[in-house]
Length: 235
Image 1 (cartoon, rainbow, N blue to C red):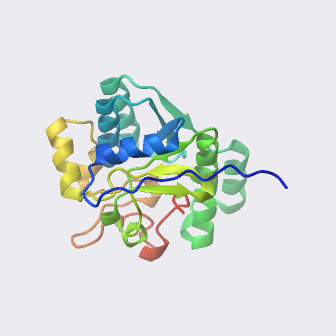
Image 2: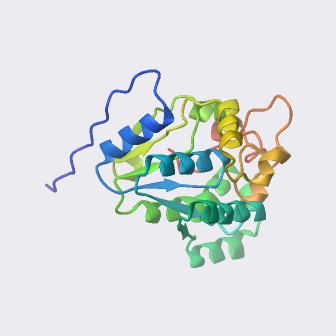
């Protein structure tokens, strides 16, 4: 029988733990190269700023689905200029996108959850799998407060769906107010759409501004029920 790699051991973290402490604990637990998956949301840029402060060797990668907002590209360029970092962009496989659009049209993702997840698999999930190859861990900007699908995430997790990588969620306990307090205090680059009612930003056709009283991810795939609002990157 083939040998399986030993599962990494995660440290026990105290209830009151800072984002920087989560980051450092995750980097230590990973024991190898770690990268940040960035959509250039305000959360992700906060983490980029934190990573720069602790001086860790963390790469930044992004998934270009082919349907991002112009404002997202602007934020990526602002981050690149502000921090002097390079960004590794990953694109979906051309043949898969061409086949999808040729056979099902440009808006098949609005016809059913199955179709939407198929589009996400092609444009996001498969590129993410390539981006994570060879890594020991990856960092996300997920917070528990964002939606019901994220209410139970932990600061550090073993990502079994991606080969047992250490998944690091430094802002897991932060509120939206804390994120914005940090962003304004440190004057980090912020996607202009955030100030237009878009707390969560994905592909342009799949994202709208949220209404008063809605949760932060209500504008993502707004035609679906809340429990379905993940694209497959975080399973």
